Image 1: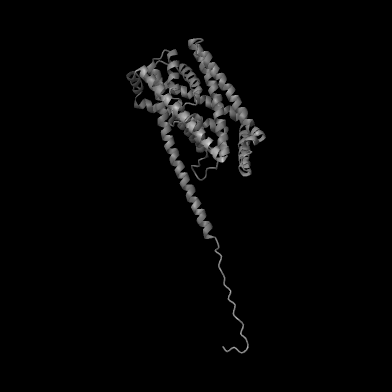
Image 2: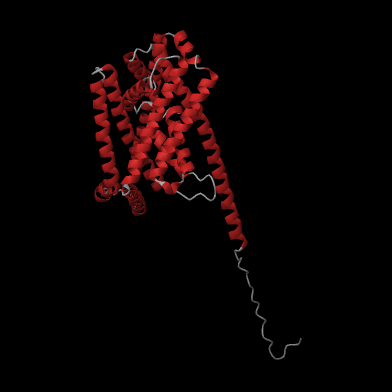
Length: 378
């Protein structure tokens, strides 16, 4: 039975990897076709027209937005430290934009980055706490995203009336609202449900593993309930995420200015919000390949932006995300290796101290001297 279970798990993991790779290749093909349809030379001219200093400007703007996103997380969990959360957030985004993984994979590695101790004085964060903190941050981000999309719909209707895109985008926003409500309910009640009905799934486990799993679930549930017991923090975190989404629209506005496109900030909010709503549908596609390019071209056409410029928006966004993301991943890997080396070194020191104070038992030998009998001569 154990062998069959392992085979099934490996088969499931293999199919999941193949499916992720399939969507990544499909998205890359769609992106290539979109660039070919728009014309390579016009797209290349639009991208290169930003210049070196212009590209550095939008990268700097991206770092400022990352700081706002870290602040949103820190508002909900002030005890975890601002810079630790900024780094973990940047790692989570970098994995989703640079590696052939879905957003779920980015969250998993984001949990790992949250547990990382950069300094010896930094507090330890357990896996259950890091998982709960990431779940709450993603939820508050979705709450801010819904408000941003609704604002984008208002601006879209203001500039273009009831465009055919309005109803699908409103449907997508409603889907996000329902999903976020269900996500919040799951976070607040999931642990109790697993404790109540989880025996069906863990009955084949040994008693040690079963108790360990349920205890971990209880710890994560307690941490989530503690986070959601501060509604003011949650509201402030969602508001900061909303400012972060406005910052992403600001980056688009700055990019359009460098490319020579006539675009106001309110139009940039409408474009970025609608594109965000479209991309949220394809969250399972690694890095949103193809989906992001198509979204910018569709909404760009609504605002009379040429296809090469609209595609330039998407490619420059990928460029700044790759520039920041690759740097973040390299730094993160360096810190991970340093942390593992320090942990190994401290383990050796502790073992050496333990060996130093270990008392080695000494064998004692007792020799019996035979008694002399009468008549024996010395």
